[in-house]
Image (cartoon, rainbow, N blue to C red; front, side, top):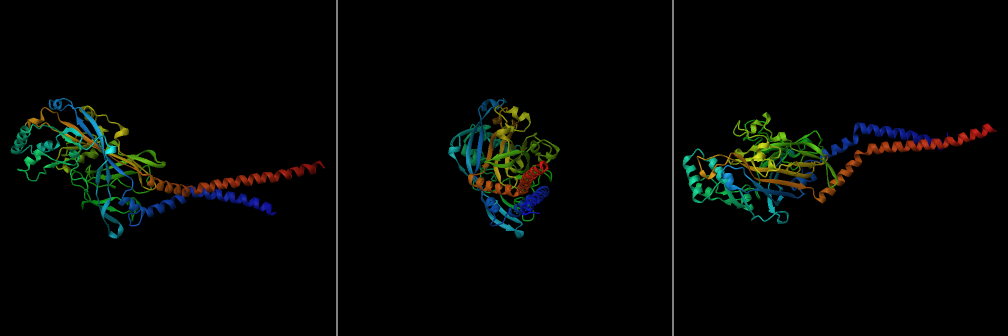
Length: 477
């Protein structure tokens, strides 16, 4: 056999072997498993790793936007008519949330830290200044009315004070006061007879430049699925506000990061101290942010549904307000505070109908998390929830409540958003590109095998044509 023929047949053999090797690698997912194993090993909360740096100091900017519901018909509401509110906002703050007092525990399998959050007002991203006036429910008055409804002496003090200063169920305060605190006259007066009361009230009072307690996280050293999972909060493995063990469970991460290699059929669990409970999100659709592919997860309506599974969240036991709302008085110093999605999105229709101005919208009011399934990095997150107040009929306690109906009254909602910055996006794009190259090596081998096969067939055909021509010439002679 000539050297030329040997090369031709060698090309054919190599083509078949390359094609077989590529198909075997695709079916066995060897390179995908190698990539996953490398990622699982590197995504650990350990000093010196990129994952730890991102966890300790999140690079993408985080913004907190507050939207208030300004009451436009307070006098009519006190007469028992339907409240009308107008959404005002956003009032935007840049949120800084580094992990501090970081200490590794139990041979690096756990790490303790506090998540200090600081808010800086962004006037260029806000509707107006913090001095804008908002008319809303008088939360301090409602709180003490409910707290001392069975103590006639203090109840009379409340009624007398409110009459003397012409104060009723509604109050007008600045944005800054409502958020970060102001000295309340009623609370100050009551402090004389009830020293434990704080005379300063704010919806986020003592929550700027502070933390919500010490966390203990799993580092992911023992299992990649344990990455950043909360093991303890404030020294406890569970909560004590709710009536069932399941509802008191602390599940998942703090929502800022998740384990790598996420699949579409997974459920992502998160604990929120603001909501006083754990929630979960499920896969919704594929997404893309800055050219980076990802999966979009969002909490389903069942998270706050009025079902048997959620009966443990009813406070007091058996007193369920309905689907889409969560009474959190037990963890908010007994204030009549209720949480829901903005504009009562995914809540019972009765809550929407009770308040004129409610316009629930999936695109605007849904909580979403866009996450790269391989590298666990949140590319885009909008976490929204609304703070609403449960108002009671308190005629016998205080005439200042008028003839108002029992309502779940919206006060404000917030949108905590983070979109990956350009620097992080470019880094992630490189990682995704490198991963795609590694994963597609088997397909490259299949392509190479097909190409070599085509070359082999073309050369073979060209070699046979001259031989056929010679045979025809010989036969004619």
